[in-house]
Image (cartoon, rainbow, N blue to C red; front, side, top):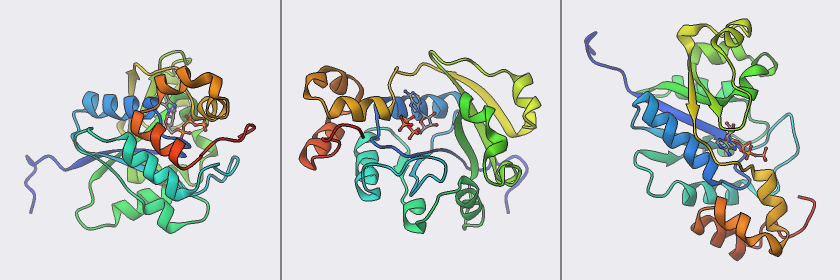
Length: 211
Ligand code: ATP
């Protein structure tokens, strides 16, 4: 049995489409783990986002790119649980699955400030907060969210931490557009891990424009 003095095992979780996995994803995970002093991180690519367009790359390719993108990050692993579950991904289902697993760690979910502002639109969000705490991240170049704003969203202070991370100005959408245009190689090389870029080229991903 654990004594009261034994800290429980904690994990930082970064979910997302990762279409493709880029250096912003790597930066946010590494910095949140460092700031929370949690040595374990899980990247969980979603299967299918309910609220937006279907990902361009297949679940298998997105999983492979995430695995290449976290190489060398100590304590980080990529998990295929949402992709195996299939269908529309709800974060709360993943959090519940982890909470009910053996040796379940305490969960910290990374959410951007914009996502925190619309938390009330998330499926079963109060239940999610029962399973996981939120690492709410203010990113470079984005309007920061305050403690008061989070409280107004109904997020108890005991279930969140607000962090500030230095993140590169890139999105997967911008990368997909740039990848379809060989004239933008410099942008692509700046924000993608070399191994992820090689995978994309080898598998001819994102070559058509309008993705
Ligand atoms: P898209 O452009 O397709 O919407 P994205 O680049 O925003 O994709 P997601 O897979 O939707 O990537 O994001 C997963 C997580 O990574 C989210 O929590 C998001 O806030 C965070 N994230 C996305 N881009 C960056 C970035 N440049 N720096 C830090 N975190 C980022």
